[in-house]
Image 1 (cartoon, rainbow, N blue to C red):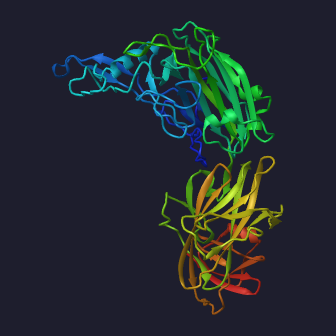
Image 2: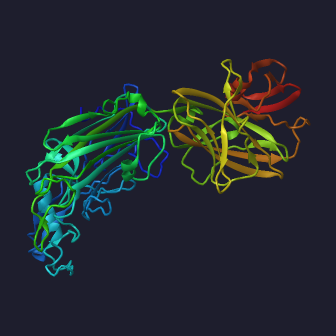
Length: 559
């Protein structure tokens, strides 16, 4: 069904590569409309091109001030990346061309295919638009030109990227002008996602052209955990056992009707094969044959000085790209159920905050001892992960904070203890910002991890740290504030690295090495907490409490 019933709209932020994939988001204005929705416990991306933009049009002016000039309204539909069509002047892949107002040849940028009612309407609009240039061929007179709102760079000879009306629906295609060599490309970045159902799209013939001939399109599908910088690279890529490359000659012949393509079937794979991969769909034609019945990709002939094509090739369309997938998420900290958020550590009580790109609001400080290395542990739980799990030092590198790849991650042993060593690798960039990476699993898993880093400030004062945490798809930013001070306390005993928070009528404790006992000031035992339960915290009434951790005794006041 073209229009899915949408529920629980959300937006997912992706890790971008050199090649920009479809953005998994909803935007009714872009013409290439993407919906990320919750649909029967699966997330669905649909690109159905049903732009809310009006149709482009032109009309004769009736005002005295502009009498003799025709008004042109060109409705541009900015793409959401991951889509392009390159049209070449011949078959040598050297120069691509497109009209000034009808662009869609940049997969990694926002193009602007134009919404038009039909080919007939498009040709009339372009005729009027190009009329801004006078017969001299060089002088542009915007005051006395026969049209307004046009462009001398628009031409019937040159290709135009369009969102066409087709009955009650809208589809994407390219009017080729005089050219024959077209290469459509689409890129789905499924890294970090589990593909649950077949990836599908529709292809058909929008207009048979005027040549009276047909054109054949070759399909190439490329799926890999790596990325490529341009679709032209696919032409030189082979199936090397790691990257899937499937080529189907004569995949679609113009005039053969509308077809629904099931991508995994074409590739001889199950839908899950595309899990955690970058998927590139590439369709190429050299167009119709010349007068000698040879398909050489050379342009059709044009008429005299106006260079208008005598005939133009058939026009294909694409519609209803769809993929269903399971998207990883974070369940702990609970504030990260939504993606692309900033979280304050708040001395062990995570709190989501408004966007804070500069780390200007780091939250409640965690006390540490000046000059003493203090381990800080946080719980991180990720659901349905299939990609890598990464933690990156963000913004500015600080020597106050260190990590050890051998001990940074510990998994839950099943009874609440984080003792199972989890493999990770540590790398640093040119700015010394470090990244810890846990490899992608063989199949989807739920992570229950304790992540530990060390803080050691040699002098008294405050220090901040921002960590960018990603499960290969969803990510959030974890912000920390530490206050280093001498080793004194209210009870006269030394402060240990134990972190105690008494916010929100609760007591929570981090960095405990053994069970925690909590007593009222009169000596009545309130609770005995495991290490993990101490981190999660316990609700208490307002008042003074005594916390016993091994031989350590701490007094706290809960307001």
